[in-house]
Length: 143
Image (spheres, rainbow, N blue to C red):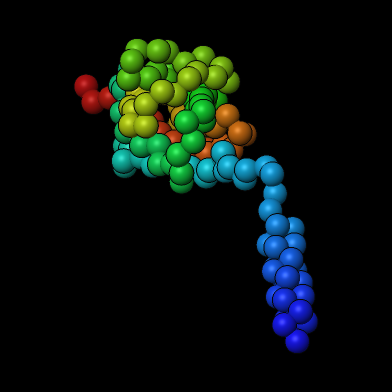
């Protein structure tokens, strides 16, 4: 009887070991890509030629991965103007620039009297993109 119980016990332990070890995987599952958003403070809607609008931005990460890199670029679909970073970098349309801070400011300077629209794209090194659109109406300068 003791031999039968020992055999059942050994078979049970082996079955449990096979069950537990079959669920193991040698590869670690490390999440590298996290969602993110870019939040902005309210931005003025009216602008005159030569005036600069400040756009205050905050990059909100859904998680932290040390090797994630962010870039920023813009495209102007209506009007004419300049977009620059708070460090003085003047952006060229559709060129990517490294985004090294999570809190940053953009400055848009109007160069036309037309309605102006810019699209700003923030992209991470895994291909996730956050698009922001800013529209400015022309306001005639008072004499």
